[in-house]
Structure formats: C-alpha cells, structure tokens
Image (cartoon, rainbow, N blue to C red; front, top):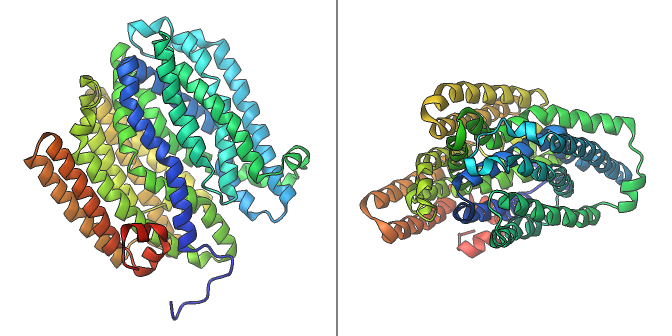
Length: 508
C-alpha cells in the first residue's frame, strides 16, 4: 500500500500466516475427528468408562506439560533465532534429553504405584477392579506423547506446519478408532479405550521419528555440542512459559480430573464424561483460533528479530479472520447442540448447557485473536506469568463456588471465565506494551454481520424442529460465514487467504 514503508525482505506476510494457519488447522482437525469418535466410544464402552479414560488422559497431558519444562514452546522461540545448524540441532537434542528422561522416570514410578494411585479416582463399580491395571498400562502414553509433542514442535519451529496433518489426523485419531473397534470385538470393556489409545499413540511416536529426521540432521542431533548459553536460553525460555502453558492445559485437562475427584463414585466418572463431551464439541470452533496460535507463535518470534513493527499487522489480520470463521461456527455448535447430542446415548444430553457455555466462550475468545501466543513469543517474559495468575485465580474461585452445587455445569462456567480472562488480558497488555490492538472498523463490521447471522440461527432453532432445524442452522452458518469473510476482511486480507478466497469466490 502506498505511504507504507517497504517490509523487510525476511518479514512474514499475510500469506505466510494464512498458509501456515490453514495447514495447522488441518492438523488440528484431529479434534474434530475426536469429537465425531466420542459418541462411538461412549456407545461401545459406556459414559462412566469414557469418563475415567478422559480423566487419565487429562492427567497424562498435564504431567507431560509439567515434566517437559515447556521446552516444546521454548523450541519455537529459540530455534528460529539460530543461524547455525549445529546449534539448532543441539536445542532439539537438549529438549529430547530433558523431556524423555523425566517422563520415562515418572511413568515407571507411577506404574509401580498404580494400586495406591487408583484409590484417588472415582469410577463405576464395574471399572474399580480394573483401574490399577488401566493406570499401569496407560501411564506409558506419557513418554510417547511427550516425544510426539517435541518432534512436532521442532518441525513447527522450522515454520513447517503441514507435516503434522497425517500424524494428527490418521495415525493419532483414525487409527485409534480402528483399534477401539478391534479391542471391543475382542471383548475388552474397561480397558478397551486404554489399550486402543496406547496402540495408536505408539504408531504416532514411531512416525514422529521420521518427521524429526526430515527437518533435522540425525547425525547432528547425536553429536551436536550443547553450549552453555544455548542450554540456558532454551531452559529459561521454556521454564518462563511453563506457568502459562500449565494454566492453559489445566483449563483443558484438569476440570474433568477435579470433577472426578470432587464427586464420589460413578457420578464422578459420569460428570467427567459429560464435561468432556461438551468441551470436546466446543473445541471444534477453536480449531481456527488454535491454528493461528500455533502459527503466530514461531512466526512472531521470527518477525520480532526482523521487524517488530509488522507484528501488529499480522495480529489484526489473524484476529479478523479468526472472528469471521469462529463466531459463526460457535453459533452452529450452540444452535444445533440438541441435534448433535442426539447421536450419543440418552444420558449425554446432560452436556447441552456445558456445550452452549463453552462454545459462547470460544466465540468471545476468538475476537481478540492469538493474543496470548504473541505475548509469549515476542519477549514479554513476565506477562505470561501474570496472565496465568489471573486465569488460575478466576478458575479456582469460581470452581470452588459453583461445582459443589452445579457439578459439571459450574465447572464449565469457571473454565469459560478463566479462558476469557487470559486472552483479553493479553490483548490489553499488547495494547499497552506495543501499541497494537485487534479492534478496527473491519473487525467490528465483521462482528456485526456475524451477530445478524447468529440471530437468524437462533430464530431457526426456535421455530423449527428435527432434521429441518439442523439443516436450516447449517445453511445459515454457511451463509453467515461467507458474508462475514466478505465484509469483515479488507481486500488485502482476502488476497492473503489465497486459494480459500478463490474457492469461496470472495472478491479480491
């Protein structure tokens, strides 16, 4: 555009962000597949067995994020700044050494004490006897999952977002569905999902070795010397981001765990299962926003070393696209919630208010775009800690107030408030520290168009019933998304979307 300074030749463009987000979004479609697989798992193994499975998987995720010292995020901050291949490989080598040693030792310790640990979890009577064995088997997903996370994070640090697609979509999710059907056919009930998950993750980890050696030299990974300054920088970057990353994962994985611990017996397993149903379906709109989070992390780290002034342009572009795609999609999840839950067992309808609350929070979260990722990656080391404290305070206070009386619904309210507190606080911090904000005329214009579409979906949901209601809401979602992209993005934004604009016939 005239009147603007020429960008640095190594600057990140709108097209870089859109292309990377598109590829990362495809890889995150695993969440969508998991949401589709959810009713199958519940039909096969029951709500209570599914509930204890998600509790154990949540515990593994939290432990993985704690024990790898957030080196997955640290790699995305450190690797793009290395101009020497040996140092880049050395950073990945250190991350692998630290994360694999800590998680393998923890897995062995937990497996040896599975009987004692099982006493802390609430489960259905039919699963009680098998629970220690389930824990002893499932805990070995901890080092496997951590390796997958390190390998895929190292690839993203090379600004390569596409290779995760086959891993996340086919081997991690589709293979799990096939294994689940197989173990069910063999007569496994309580341990069926546990075995299926471990089997699919083992294949994913093996394929992650190939992914890692595609972007890093295997010989350099073995012999690269880990210099003291590099190790210090990587560890400080990771540990500095650890509280915010743990808080983010806690808001995803810990609610089901806490519901299970706070509510005794089968009710605790059912509450965890209901919350996870609502959370998983509400995560579908987050695919878009999370794609931009994945991409803007390493890209903003790279951009900060080249020309920091461009970060604001990328941030506003990401926020406009995120709003245009996520707000209508959240409306689809809210106003078709009853129809979506009808494919589950009857008891799953209890997840309806949870799905509505969490989907609404995802829509409000999308408006401020990838604010938290940018704050973490452009050098504001103290701010992620502040955001973590804000999120944890909001979540814990509301959970303690609401869960004893309202169960999973109270937890949904607490989680929604904490998620919004984190992202909106990061937005304010970026406005103060760098003078950038997601709000401009185009974003507000797109938001207004989206709200008109949501009102139309609400009318269809109220007036119609059965298949006609679902079909009408889906049609209105598609129309709303197109008009929001058309009027919520600038011409340069639509050009930056490349092939998507052509496919949707958006004027460029």
